[in-house]
Image 1 (cartoon, rainbow, N blue to C red):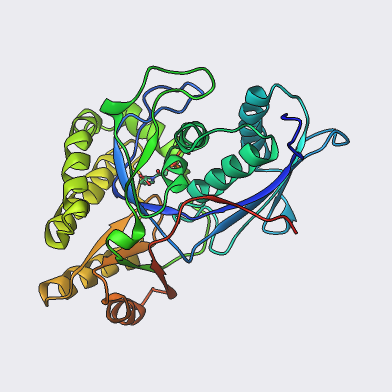
Image 2 (image 1 turned 180 degrees about the vertical axis):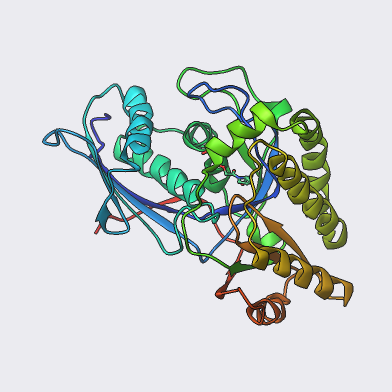
Length: 337
Ligand code: 2P0
Protein backbone atom coordinates (compact mmCIF):
# COMPACT_ATOMS: atom_id res chain seq x y z
CA UNK A 1 0.00 0.00 0.00
CA UNK A 2 1.32 3.47 -0.83
CA UNK A 3 2.27 5.46 2.26
CA UNK A 4 -0.27 8.09 1.23
CA UNK A 5 -3.09 5.61 0.70
CA UNK A 6 -5.76 5.28 3.38
CA UNK A 7 -6.96 1.81 2.42
CA UNK A 8 -10.46 3.24 1.94
CA UNK A 9 -12.17 4.65 -1.15
CA UNK A 10 -15.51 4.88 -2.89
CA UNK A 11 -16.14 4.74 -6.64
CA UNK A 12 -19.08 4.53 -8.99
CA UNK A 13 -19.50 3.10 -12.46
CA UNK A 14 -22.28 2.42 -14.92
CA UNK A 15 -23.26 -0.73 -16.82
CA UNK A 16 -22.51 -0.89 -20.50
CA UNK A 17 -24.45 -2.54 -23.27
CA UNK A 18 -22.60 -4.25 -26.08
CA UNK A 19 -23.60 -3.44 -29.66
CA UNK A 20 -21.01 -5.97 -30.85
CA UNK A 21 -21.14 -8.79 -28.33
CA UNK A 22 -18.52 -10.54 -26.23
CA UNK A 23 -19.27 -14.21 -25.60
CA UNK A 24 -16.40 -16.65 -25.10
CA UNK A 25 -13.06 -16.84 -23.36
CA UNK A 26 -9.66 -17.42 -24.91
CA UNK A 27 -8.73 -19.86 -22.15
CA UNK A 28 -9.84 -20.75 -18.66
CA UNK A 29 -6.90 -18.90 -17.10
CA UNK A 30 -7.60 -16.48 -14.26
CA UNK A 31 -6.70 -13.61 -16.60
CA UNK A 32 -10.13 -14.07 -18.20
CA UNK A 33 -8.98 -13.09 -21.69
CA UNK A 34 -11.90 -12.72 -24.12
CA UNK A 35 -11.96 -14.77 -27.31
CA UNK A 36 -13.69 -12.02 -29.31
CA UNK A 37 -13.57 -8.25 -29.74
CA UNK A 38 -16.58 -6.18 -28.63
CA UNK A 39 -17.96 -2.63 -28.70
CA UNK A 40 -20.37 -1.05 -26.24
CA UNK A 41 -22.09 2.05 -24.97
CA UNK A 42 -22.08 3.08 -21.31
CA UNK A 43 -25.39 4.01 -19.67
CA UNK A 44 -26.04 6.90 -17.36
CA UNK A 45 -28.96 6.36 -14.98
CA UNK A 46 -28.09 2.78 -13.99
CA UNK A 47 -25.28 2.86 -11.46
CA UNK A 48 -23.14 0.74 -9.13
CA UNK A 49 -21.45 2.32 -6.14
CA UNK A 50 -18.69 0.47 -4.32
CA UNK A 51 -16.80 1.30 -1.11
CA UNK A 52 -13.71 -0.64 -0.16
CA UNK A 53 -11.97 -0.61 3.22
CA UNK A 54 -8.77 -2.61 3.57
CA UNK A 55 -8.52 -3.11 7.31
CA UNK A 56 -5.85 -4.92 9.34
CA UNK A 57 -8.43 -5.81 11.99
CA UNK A 58 -10.52 -7.93 9.59
CA UNK A 59 -9.95 -11.71 9.74
CA UNK A 60 -11.61 -12.32 6.36
CA UNK A 61 -13.07 -10.38 3.45
CA UNK A 62 -16.67 -9.18 3.77
CA UNK A 63 -19.18 -8.39 1.05
CA UNK A 64 -22.26 -6.28 1.61
CA UNK A 65 -24.48 -6.19 -1.49
CA UNK A 66 -27.40 -3.75 -1.53
CA UNK A 67 -27.21 -3.45 2.27
CA UNK A 68 -27.12 -7.18 3.05
CA UNK A 69 -24.21 -9.44 3.90
CA UNK A 70 -23.68 -11.75 0.91
CA UNK A 71 -21.75 -14.99 1.43
CA UNK A 72 -22.70 -16.48 -1.94
CA UNK A 73 -20.87 -13.94 -4.11
CA UNK A 74 -18.02 -13.48 -1.62
CA UNK A 75 -15.70 -16.10 -3.14
CA UNK A 76 -15.62 -14.32 -6.51
CA UNK A 77 -15.08 -10.92 -4.87
CA UNK A 78 -12.34 -12.31 -2.64
CA UNK A 79 -10.52 -13.87 -5.59
CA UNK A 80 -10.63 -10.50 -7.34
CA UNK A 81 -9.50 -8.61 -4.24
CA UNK A 82 -6.50 -10.94 -4.32
CA UNK A 83 -5.58 -9.41 -7.70
CA UNK A 84 -5.53 -5.94 -6.11
CA UNK A 85 -3.62 -7.24 -3.07
CA UNK A 86 -1.03 -8.92 -5.29
CA UNK A 87 -0.31 -5.63 -7.09
CA UNK A 88 -0.09 -3.76 -3.78
CA UNK A 89 2.02 -6.48 -2.16
CA UNK A 90 -0.26 -6.76 0.86
CA UNK A 91 -2.39 -9.42 2.51
CA UNK A 92 -4.89 -7.13 4.28
CA UNK A 93 -8.53 -8.25 4.23
CA UNK A 94 -11.20 -5.93 2.87
CA UNK A 95 -14.79 -4.97 3.52
CA UNK A 96 -16.63 -4.28 0.25
CA UNK A 97 -19.97 -2.49 0.27
CA UNK A 98 -21.63 -2.30 -3.11
CA UNK A 99 -25.07 -1.31 -4.25
CA UNK A 100 -26.88 -1.16 -7.57
CA UNK A 101 -29.86 1.06 -8.32
CA UNK A 102 -31.15 -1.63 -10.70
CA UNK A 103 -31.79 -5.43 -10.58
CA UNK A 104 -28.58 -7.41 -9.90
CA UNK A 105 -27.55 -10.33 -12.17
CA UNK A 106 -30.60 -10.04 -14.40
CA UNK A 107 -28.90 -9.30 -17.70
CA UNK A 108 -28.31 -5.63 -16.93
CA UNK A 109 -24.52 -5.86 -16.71
CA UNK A 110 -24.23 -5.43 -12.95
CA UNK A 111 -20.91 -7.30 -13.03
CA UNK A 112 -19.57 -4.76 -15.56
CA UNK A 113 -20.41 -1.73 -13.42
CA UNK A 114 -19.66 -3.49 -10.13
CA UNK A 115 -16.17 -4.67 -11.05
CA UNK A 116 -15.29 -1.40 -12.83
CA UNK A 117 -16.20 0.43 -9.60
CA UNK A 118 -14.22 -2.11 -7.53
CA UNK A 119 -11.09 -1.52 -9.61
CA UNK A 120 -11.43 2.27 -9.45
CA UNK A 121 -12.02 2.15 -5.69
CA UNK A 122 -9.22 -0.37 -5.08
CA UNK A 123 -6.78 1.66 -7.18
CA UNK A 124 -7.53 4.76 -5.10
CA UNK A 125 -7.69 3.00 -1.72
CA UNK A 126 -4.33 1.28 -2.16
CA UNK A 127 -2.61 4.12 -4.02
CA UNK A 128 -1.74 1.81 -6.91
CA UNK A 129 -1.48 4.61 -9.48
CA UNK A 130 -2.85 2.50 -12.34
CA UNK A 131 -3.76 4.45 -15.47
CA UNK A 132 -7.09 3.88 -17.23
CA UNK A 133 -5.69 1.28 -19.60
CA UNK A 134 -4.19 -0.72 -16.73
CA UNK A 135 -7.43 -0.40 -14.74
CA UNK A 136 -9.32 -1.64 -17.77
CA UNK A 137 -7.01 -4.67 -18.07
CA UNK A 138 -7.47 -5.45 -14.40
CA UNK A 139 -11.27 -5.03 -14.63
CA UNK A 140 -11.29 -7.39 -17.62
CA UNK A 141 -9.51 -10.01 -15.56
CA UNK A 142 -12.41 -9.73 -13.07
CA UNK A 143 -15.26 -9.67 -15.60
CA UNK A 144 -14.80 -9.26 -19.35
CA UNK A 145 -17.42 -6.57 -19.87
CA UNK A 146 -16.15 -4.53 -16.86
CA UNK A 147 -13.15 -3.38 -18.92
CA UNK A 148 -15.55 -1.31 -21.06
CA UNK A 149 -17.31 0.36 -18.09
CA UNK A 150 -14.13 2.24 -17.17
CA UNK A 151 -14.99 4.53 -20.08
CA UNK A 152 -17.94 6.80 -20.82
CA UNK A 153 -19.74 7.00 -24.14
CA UNK A 154 -18.62 4.29 -26.56
CA UNK A 155 -15.83 1.78 -25.82
CA UNK A 156 -14.27 -1.19 -27.55
CA UNK A 157 -12.06 -4.15 -26.83
CA UNK A 158 -10.20 -4.82 -30.06
CA UNK A 159 -8.15 -7.97 -29.76
CA UNK A 160 -5.70 -7.47 -32.65
CA UNK A 161 -4.36 -4.45 -30.69
CA UNK A 162 -3.87 -6.49 -27.51
CA UNK A 163 -0.40 -6.37 -25.99
CA UNK A 164 1.79 -9.26 -24.84
CA UNK A 165 0.55 -10.45 -21.45
CA UNK A 166 1.85 -8.40 -18.53
CA UNK A 167 2.17 -9.76 -15.01
CA UNK A 168 -1.06 -9.10 -13.10
CA UNK A 169 -3.00 -7.75 -16.08
CA UNK A 170 -2.91 -10.07 -19.09
CA UNK A 171 -3.31 -8.47 -22.51
CA UNK A 172 -6.80 -7.40 -23.64
CA UNK A 173 -8.00 -3.92 -22.65
CA UNK A 174 -10.75 -1.51 -23.55
CA UNK A 175 -10.37 1.96 -24.98
CA UNK A 176 -12.77 4.76 -25.69
CA UNK A 177 -14.22 5.10 -29.19
CA UNK A 178 -16.13 8.36 -28.57
CA UNK A 179 -17.48 10.45 -25.69
CA UNK A 180 -21.18 10.33 -24.84
CA UNK A 181 -21.58 13.87 -26.20
CA UNK A 182 -20.42 12.73 -29.65
CA UNK A 183 -23.78 11.02 -30.27
CA UNK A 184 -26.34 11.26 -27.45
CA UNK A 185 -28.26 8.09 -28.22
CA UNK A 186 -31.07 7.15 -25.84
CA UNK A 187 -31.64 3.69 -24.41
CA UNK A 188 -34.92 2.17 -23.20
CA UNK A 189 -34.57 -0.96 -21.08
CA UNK A 190 -37.75 -3.04 -21.06
CA UNK A 191 -37.69 -4.98 -17.78
CA UNK A 192 -39.56 -8.24 -18.25
CA UNK A 193 -38.19 -10.07 -15.18
CA UNK A 194 -36.37 -8.98 -12.02
CA UNK A 195 -35.21 -12.53 -11.20
CA UNK A 196 -31.52 -13.42 -11.19
CA UNK A 197 -30.58 -15.43 -14.27
CA UNK A 198 -30.18 -19.16 -13.74
CA UNK A 199 -27.05 -19.59 -15.85
CA UNK A 200 -24.39 -16.91 -15.42
CA UNK A 201 -22.40 -15.60 -18.34
CA UNK A 202 -19.15 -17.31 -17.34
CA UNK A 203 -20.81 -20.74 -17.23
CA UNK A 204 -22.82 -20.03 -20.37
CA UNK A 205 -19.74 -18.98 -22.34
CA UNK A 206 -17.91 -22.15 -21.36
CA UNK A 207 -20.88 -24.28 -22.37
CA UNK A 208 -20.99 -22.57 -25.77
CA UNK A 209 -17.24 -23.07 -26.28
CA UNK A 210 -17.50 -26.75 -25.49
CA UNK A 211 -20.68 -27.65 -27.32
CA UNK A 212 -22.05 -25.14 -29.82
CA UNK A 213 -21.41 -26.26 -33.43
CA UNK A 214 -21.48 -22.56 -34.41
CA UNK A 215 -18.81 -21.44 -31.92
CA UNK A 216 -15.90 -21.33 -34.40
CA UNK A 217 -17.95 -19.31 -36.89
CA UNK A 218 -18.88 -16.93 -34.05
CA UNK A 219 -15.21 -16.39 -33.14
CA UNK A 220 -14.25 -15.49 -36.70
CA UNK A 221 -16.61 -12.52 -37.16
CA UNK A 222 -16.16 -10.00 -34.36
CA UNK A 223 -12.96 -8.18 -35.32
CA UNK A 224 -14.56 -7.12 -38.60
CA UNK A 225 -17.83 -6.21 -36.88
CA UNK A 226 -16.03 -4.01 -34.33
CA UNK A 227 -14.05 -2.16 -37.02
CA UNK A 228 -17.27 -1.52 -38.94
CA UNK A 229 -19.26 -0.52 -35.85
CA UNK A 230 -16.57 1.97 -34.80
CA UNK A 231 -16.74 3.64 -38.23
CA UNK A 232 -20.55 3.80 -38.01
CA UNK A 233 -20.45 5.31 -34.51
CA UNK A 234 -17.91 7.92 -35.61
CA UNK A 235 -20.06 8.72 -38.68
CA UNK A 236 -23.28 8.67 -36.58
CA UNK A 237 -24.81 6.30 -39.15
CA UNK A 238 -27.84 5.03 -37.23
CA UNK A 239 -29.40 2.93 -39.98
CA UNK A 240 -26.33 0.82 -40.65
CA UNK A 241 -25.44 0.53 -36.96
CA UNK A 242 -28.98 -0.75 -36.31
CA UNK A 243 -28.55 -3.52 -38.86
CA UNK A 244 -25.06 -4.49 -37.68
CA UNK A 245 -25.91 -4.44 -33.98
CA UNK A 246 -29.06 -6.57 -34.34
CA UNK A 247 -26.97 -8.96 -36.44
CA UNK A 248 -24.36 -9.27 -33.67
CA UNK A 249 -27.03 -9.83 -31.01
CA UNK A 250 -28.94 -12.47 -32.94
CA UNK A 251 -25.70 -14.15 -34.06
CA UNK A 252 -24.56 -14.49 -30.44
CA UNK A 253 -27.90 -15.87 -29.27
CA UNK A 254 -28.17 -18.28 -32.20
CA UNK A 255 -24.76 -19.69 -31.30
CA UNK A 256 -25.64 -19.83 -27.58
CA UNK A 257 -29.02 -21.46 -28.25
CA UNK A 258 -27.21 -24.19 -30.18
CA UNK A 259 -25.13 -25.09 -27.09
CA UNK A 260 -26.01 -28.33 -25.30
CA UNK A 261 -28.15 -27.90 -23.29
CA UNK A 262 -29.25 -24.81 -25.21
CA UNK A 263 -28.95 -21.38 -23.59
CA UNK A 264 -32.28 -19.62 -23.96
CA UNK A 265 -32.11 -16.26 -22.20
CA UNK A 266 -35.26 -14.84 -23.84
CA UNK A 267 -38.79 -14.96 -22.50
CA UNK A 268 -41.88 -14.53 -24.67
CA UNK A 269 -41.99 -10.86 -23.70
CA UNK A 270 -38.39 -10.41 -24.95
CA UNK A 271 -39.43 -11.62 -28.39
CA UNK A 272 -42.59 -9.47 -28.37
CA UNK A 273 -40.43 -6.45 -27.58
CA UNK A 274 -38.06 -7.31 -30.45
CA UNK A 275 -41.01 -7.36 -32.86
CA UNK A 276 -42.30 -4.10 -31.42
CA UNK A 277 -38.92 -2.42 -32.04
CA UNK A 278 -38.78 -3.70 -35.61
CA UNK A 279 -42.33 -2.50 -36.29
CA UNK A 280 -41.43 0.93 -34.96
CA UNK A 281 -38.36 1.01 -37.21
CA UNK A 282 -40.38 -0.07 -40.24
CA UNK A 283 -42.71 2.84 -39.42
CA UNK A 284 -39.82 5.31 -39.55
CA UNK A 285 -38.74 5.47 -35.87
CA UNK A 286 -34.93 5.20 -35.62
CA UNK A 287 -34.58 2.41 -33.05
CA UNK A 288 -32.97 -1.02 -32.85
CA UNK A 289 -32.82 -3.74 -30.22
CA UNK A 290 -30.17 -5.64 -28.39
CA UNK A 291 -30.32 -8.20 -25.58
CA UNK A 292 -27.79 -9.92 -23.34
CA UNK A 293 -27.57 -12.91 -20.98
CA UNK A 294 -31.03 -12.29 -19.55
CA UNK A 295 -34.55 -11.51 -20.75
CA UNK A 296 -34.50 -7.68 -20.65
CA UNK A 297 -34.75 -5.99 -24.03
CA UNK A 298 -32.69 -2.88 -24.68
CA UNK A 299 -33.91 -0.49 -27.37
CA UNK A 300 -31.28 1.93 -28.70
CA UNK A 301 -32.92 5.09 -30.02
CA UNK A 302 -31.64 8.01 -32.06
CA UNK A 303 -31.53 11.26 -30.03
CA UNK A 304 -35.04 12.52 -29.26
CA UNK A 305 -36.89 9.21 -29.77
CA UNK A 306 -36.60 7.65 -26.29
CA UNK A 307 -40.03 8.76 -25.03
CA UNK A 308 -41.90 7.43 -28.05
CA UNK A 309 -40.13 4.06 -27.90
CA UNK A 310 -40.58 3.77 -24.11
CA UNK A 311 -44.34 4.37 -24.47
CA UNK A 312 -44.67 1.65 -27.12
CA UNK A 313 -42.67 -0.89 -25.07
CA UNK A 314 -44.57 -0.10 -21.86
CA UNK A 315 -47.84 -1.08 -23.54
CA UNK A 316 -46.68 -4.63 -24.19
CA UNK A 317 -48.11 -7.39 -22.06
CA UNK A 318 -45.17 -8.84 -20.09
CA UNK A 319 -43.15 -5.63 -19.90
CA UNK A 320 -43.13 -4.69 -16.20
CA UNK A 321 -41.51 -1.29 -16.57
CA UNK A 322 -39.26 0.63 -18.89
CA UNK A 323 -36.08 2.38 -17.72
CA UNK A 324 -34.89 5.31 -19.79
CA UNK A 325 -31.18 6.08 -19.98
CA UNK A 326 -28.85 8.48 -21.67
CA UNK A 327 -25.23 7.63 -22.40
CA UNK A 328 -23.05 8.15 -19.37
CA UNK A 329 -19.53 8.68 -18.05
CA UNK A 330 -16.84 6.21 -17.08
CA UNK A 331 -15.92 4.95 -13.63
CA UNK A 332 -14.89 7.59 -11.13
CA UNK A 333 -13.70 7.91 -7.57
CA UNK A 334 -16.16 9.68 -5.24
CA UNK A 335 -15.60 11.50 -1.98
CA UNK A 336 -15.94 9.36 1.14
CA UNK A 337 -18.75 10.23 3.56
C1 2P0 B 1 -21.39 -8.35 -23.59
N1 2P0 B 1 -22.17 -10.20 -22.14
O1 2P0 B 1 -20.59 -8.12 -24.50
C2 2P0 B 1 -21.89 -9.77 -23.48
C3 2P0 B 1 -23.16 -9.98 -24.22
C4 2P0 B 1 -23.44 -10.87 -22.02
C5 2P0 B 1 -23.95 -10.97 -23.41
O2 2P0 B 1 -20.21 -9.55 -21.37
O3 2P0 B 1 -17.43 -14.20 -17.42
O4 2P0 B 1 -20.30 -10.81 -17.06
O5 2P0 B 1 -17.48 -12.12 -16.07
O6 2P0 B 1 -16.17 -12.21 -18.21
O7 2P0 B 1 -18.55 -9.82 -18.60
C6 2P0 B 1 -21.48 -10.73 -19.86
O8 2P0 B 1 -20.34 -11.36 -19.50
O9 2P0 B 1 -18.65 -12.30 -18.23
C7 2P0 B 1 -21.24 -10.14 -21.18
P1 2P0 B 1 -17.36 -12.72 -17.43
P2 2P0 B 1 -19.43 -10.95 -18.25
O10 2P0 B 1 -21.80 -7.45 -22.81
